[in-house]
Amino acid sequence: MFLLNNRNPDLKPILGKLIKSLRLKHNISQEDLAGLCDVDRSYISLVERGQNEPSVSKIFEICNGLKIKPSDFFRLVEIECGKLKDK
Image (cartoon, one colour):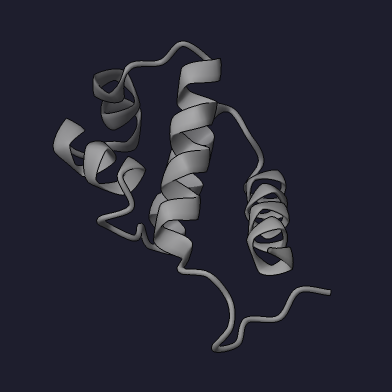
């Protein structure tokens, strides 16, 4: 079980990396994803670069745009956090 504590990595870059990789996997532009999520393209860019942390409701919208269940997305986040924690 993964628990957040002071030794866990910053989530912003992990979220951004996963969103970008899923977006590219589905061949969706930042502009298209932004339109699906009702945000500006610059917001998606900030999230993907780890400079902005989306709210839970925004993550659900992004997941909908990327056609991935939020539970699957958070499972991927947990896996990435575990990889960094093991280093």
